[in-house]
Amino acid sequence: MAEYTAEKYTNMIIVYGVAGENAHAAARLYAERFSDRERHPDHKIILRCIRRARESGNFMLDRRNAGAPVQNRVNKEERILRAFEENPQNSVRHVAQMLGLSRYVVHYTLRQNGLHPYHH
Image: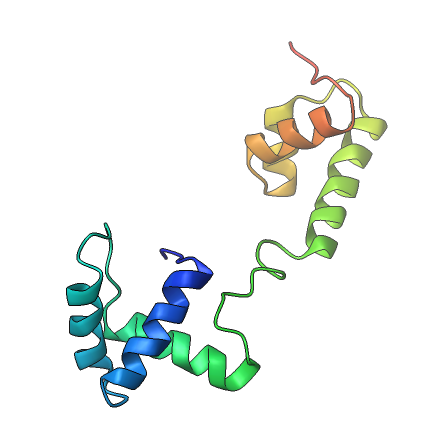
């Protein structure tokens, strides 16, 4: 999903009001007034912006809780590290298969903890 700046979201709210709270008309008006901009929001984006502003008082997207929950990451990390503690001869591929994770996640976790994978 494309994100817009605070200024552009503010412009969306203004044209929504000028267009008589009609999102389709606001999208057309936005494209006319800001024809120099690379992207123009459609009516759905304008309505989402208005809804966020009405519900939370903030028209910007809330990305604070984006991504995997911290607890899940910690659990995966602990399982990966435990697998290598129990058997340092484990391969990344074996641990990934055993835990149902991608090899990338296993490699990344090892690197983040200053460890090196065992190579056969």
